[in-house]
Image (cartoon, rainbow, N blue to C red; front, top):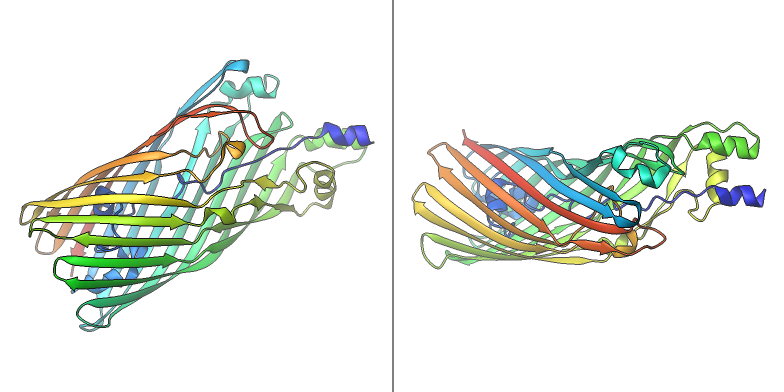
Length: 412
């Protein structure tokens, strides 16, 4: 019996919340300025960056933001002749409305996707890993957030803001388990708050501080694993190939500090530091409802489907600028560094993580009742050559991401 137990191996170390998952630059103006926006925080995405910034709205304002995230990745593992690549689009966006209640108080609500990414590989490229079987290898994870917010101007120079976030998380995954197809779908709710303060000591200088609390989301859904047919034969008992399951995932705490300065009437400069507490993501545990699945997983090195992450905290440095070519036309540029929280020992093909250097640019058009902003973000991932470890997939990883966006704002 002991020998039979050792035959069943299940290793699924999945990077669920890597830096490539979080949308680093929500809103086209913020995106074009490199996401150095905590001390600016104007426009439809203000509630995301710093809710204190929504006191800038003087009229009822409707905002819509859309972005197309286009990752292009590749993976090579020379010992087995694996040479795989993929490119797939993922859409995200925001809808918001803000209403001034009086000269000092502004309320609003935003519905947006702060997170979302995944991969989709051709199963033929990974057949060498699973005895020639052509399985599906893809992943998709995202979050939809509803944020009612309120901001109050304590004085002409200082504003504070608070948003309550209801977060709906979604995850799907298809991969190999013991050389057979593994597939799961899950979703769940979690809650968090975003709080911010903004100070403008002068007309040319602004300081901002923003905090997002961690959000624990309890995912639940169904999983199918065809390898359970083999386990049934080995143990001489019938074990279902499907089971319900739950898994808790925590979107981490985030703190952003920003400064913006206007040296001339036409030029705006901004700089941010963003810190994310990824180190809380150590090991994720999947709890299967099927009692026989629990028994099987308890006999393996990966007890009950543990996902080992061992991530580290990260700090992003962001720089941005905006220059007014005309009174109603602005050009924007930005740059930021986005380090990966995932170590080599947990790197894999389903949601890989990279150190990114990012350049951004965009345009802004201002009308009497509307604004139109365009943004473009190009993330250049540093190649990762991963050596074998217990919880990873060794090989050479590459990824770049292109993200164009558009934002429309209407005052009424």
